[in-house]
Length: 177
Image (tube, one colour):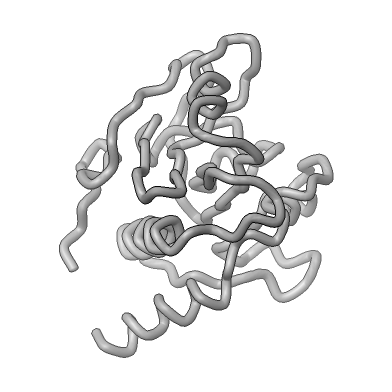
């Protein structure tokens, strides 16, 4: 598959909805890992939260239930998403529309797989989940697992990320290559 990430870090298949630059950390994100989140809400609220200057929270993209994916920042931007410096400076994090107990839609899962596939190909790593609570070398974490990096405890993403599906899809693609 052809890479769809521009040199400045924008996916050509996502809808651009730039977020405020004041809600970023500066510098270049190293993209060593991914951290998909659960938005615990829906698009109108997400967009309002992202653009509000009353809260520092920011994330690279919003993955909506209907398959639309809005990109707010370049993949190289350090956003305030995962609760501490290491995952915010070295990880690509995005919000998946919906709430705890609500499975991701097929469209959301396909978007998540595509994001992970393209970023891992760009940076030359393979998706790997942590093997234990101290593993800091994996490439796919949940927000709640970022406590190992100093983040506050959270339930996010509330069991909504089907990692087995993602690992199987990405491994199948690797075997076919």
